[in-house]
Length: 408
Image 1 (cartoon, rainbow, N blue to C red):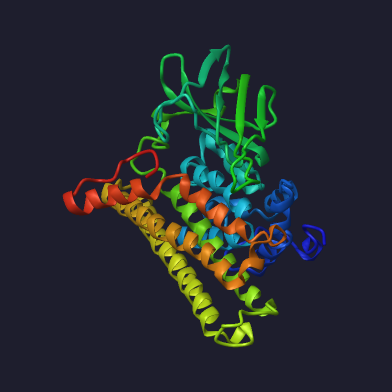
Image 2 (cartoon, rainbow, N blue to C red):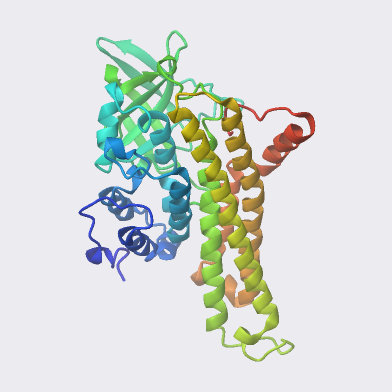
């Protein structure tokens, strides 16, 4: 069956909205062939094009600006569902959702207006931030330069782990001027001098395009640059809470996939062990208990992510009133950090339990069930839970606030 066999049944004349029939149809279509795509390493360009036409990535644009106006809780519910449908695709759009929050949703005027229009039209924004030359992962130190050139600038540098940029319409590049001023340049992904390299070779999240971005003398218009001094895009505390929680939400989505695969495994098993408690696998209390544990883990993971998202809605309300409440931002970051520590562990553990449900035959390469563990483990490694747990403990014991930047 074609990857997008159900596509002809979909009607995306209007943007999808949370809990809509069109959204469910979209996810059904994305789920078709997701395992096979990963197994054969077929990059999901067609799926991303379908997402463009569905306007999924405009979910958080406010209604007053022409968007669906989804709450943070609704967004993260959608991310969980998308992670269930395709673990790689959910990760591809992660940076887009984070950048919409920073640069578009609350800044619909001036130079940001064109990006608002682009997102409403379905455009996807990727991110080129990380540099291997920096000594500390997650730091704001960058060496990519933005040099004045007539009425614009020239952009030069090399970025790594550019998740999603391979599929994006625009790429946001973090850079510094020759005077050391921090800025973001948002340029078309196909502009001359921008090279997106598919060289990610991790054992998990193989289709996310998390490769290298090479910038060679890229022309940047003056209105494509946003300096940090122009707004609280990277300077206000805990600006990374949303992208961090998205990673956790994808793992919660993977857990839903694990549960679905575990249930299907039991139903299609033809044999059991000679010392099993029941002849028919579906009647085996040990297998029932294992699937019940996975189901409980999935419920807990989803509830935890959505509880963390609720704190982001509280933070939105504070900022919509024009207030700057650091305590609300800290609470949202704390919930996201706690969610990561718990959900990552539940997902990785459940990916192992899945193999207990199926036995040795479940480890066949043709079944591709190892993808759940590989992908969950890769997502968890983006920001080690040990460091998050330590920071949470220091806060609880000593009242020390979480780090205000980087991975918080």
